[in-house]
Image (cartoon, rainbow, N blue to C red; front, side, top):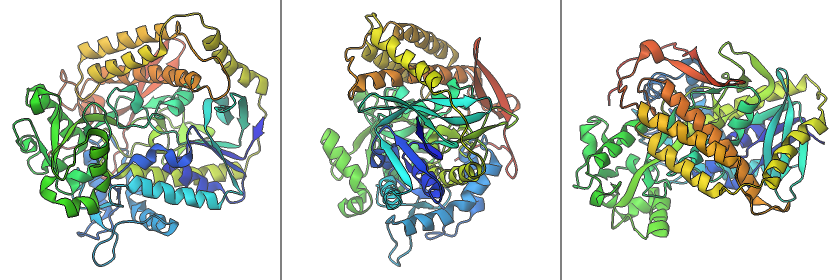
Length: 569
């Protein structure tokens, strides 16, 4: 059995920031499926939000209101307030950690406009902001290598829970196939989202719901899983992200008739409306037959910005267009479509990163979560661009601090190592010894196609019921799957199968939550219930695993300063 004081699962911004908070005086492990600097946080491009006021006068109060309005008033406002208040301090801290931000002519941190924000508050490093922050934190992590042990290319299977206390995790070394129990005083999940359940997604291949499903199978509910954000500017058919920074810098969205159509949907904000509104506008144009060349394509036009501005502010976007489709955005528009991007829901936590069991806030002792896998609900029903990097850093720090205080005052609890290993070994044996004939690849592809067709930008009861039926059928076929590689050494196929198992369960949770929420709010839009229904659905969903199957309960939204109002842009 491997033993550490604190184990952090995930090495993106949230996981790294948590690690930096807990590494003084305690033995800390960071476990990741990929090498830390390959974490999905590095794909965030456009910026990180803070009311610095370097471009226009700004305040945390305005940042809070924009965030709550953008989230369609489903945000827990007590957590959101603390989060936006912390933002300026966090930016300067990142700068001191070595993150190089773009600058104004007078040397201040540059800030640009972003969708849903009333002021330019996106602090950025060209269009590689996530990459810049991730590498700065990774360098800080390496400086503390004597107190932090990094397990790269290890897979986390399950939580070790004893009643209301978390005592560790069960893991595998992907290189050797060895299964181990990792004992800890406290565990922090920073495992990211679950965008890979969809066919068109901006998410990294590692975003397969591993963390949230480990929590769910351990008896912890998932909060607001039905709220999945579609980003308006994914590369056509591939989903690769063209940053919202492109629209923040003045890019246009054009339909197949060459029209800047956003005036019809958000006349005051145009292309800089929140993502849910822009994604629905694009999908509406394409559904009406106004896509480019009759296809599901909208044009992102940057040509009027000119090459010098593009190369200064958007160099990665230009290079992505050239590398993946041979289109130079200096000369030609980029073909885009909505792409599954961000999970507003996840493992429920309080505003200190403490995981909770239920609507009453009962804590899971020794278990904390931060970043996209968690739901403290600062984003509500729709996240504003640049708020995710802030979320990861603020709540990574908070979860780390809370875990540190907990771990200082408690010892390691005993673990039945053989029992915990046997559960995972049994799952491996079932897959290795299975005599089925179903292709796991086919099941995966059909799941993604199903979710994209029936549970994406627009939803309705008929399609959601079809979606759920197909998922249940795919789950049955999964039990009859056939593995082709039965070796132990660096067997990536077995881990892809385990990821598929997680994604199938996550897909069912998303679709059930969407079917149960009979309203439209933020990233969740029901064509058969097109209006927001505060009377019946101004509340968070909690999906519980029970012996009878999944059950959905609800808990109230925390409202402090801003009462729900009509959301116009």
